[in-house]
Image 1 (cartoon, one colour):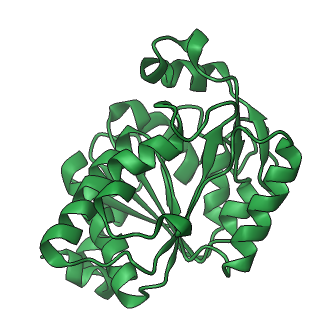
Image 2 (cartoon, helix red, strand yellow):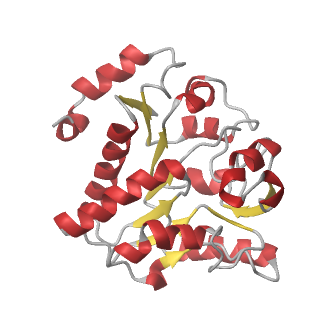
Length: 262
């Protein structure tokens, strides 16, 4: 795991967008794992801008989202399919047939979870996974006590997550209680992953996820086991980390970050 600290949320989002764009240009048929939430909105806006101004080509990309709420259809404004169309899919030249999310309206949720895993496998696995982190420390909707080897499945959402997402639904009592999510084990099988976190509200959980012990109570700690994980944070989100001088040295001196320093 590497931790990269940028000055503010805009700088952190720009770095992540540039990293994603570089991967797309290197592998036009890349399989992307995508995340949702307010933190990702800046990244998607920048990728749309790169598509329009720099001809960033999504035509061969394949995408798999981390999760979807149980009970919400694709046209529901609270669904993650709606979110992705609004923030990315409708603004770039991606083939809709290559954009995949779990079906939250499936009559057989267990079979839908199995199907989703098989489609990921048929596409060769995920090359680059984007991740946010919830205040409960979850990646995807892998709430506390999610097994580190878990696969795509239905999870009941914790009170912390329900409260965190309340504003998007007009109250925590209106947030769907369950979601289909990639498992921790599914996520760890991606070839590369980038976790983006910004703001002081994420500082405590980022410190636990990056520098704390690996525990199923905080599913993001499992990323410490990943062979190629980059955590990008702004100064506020980094404020509780212990080794910030080292993390800053990495960005300023390691050759792999040279292209991003300009």
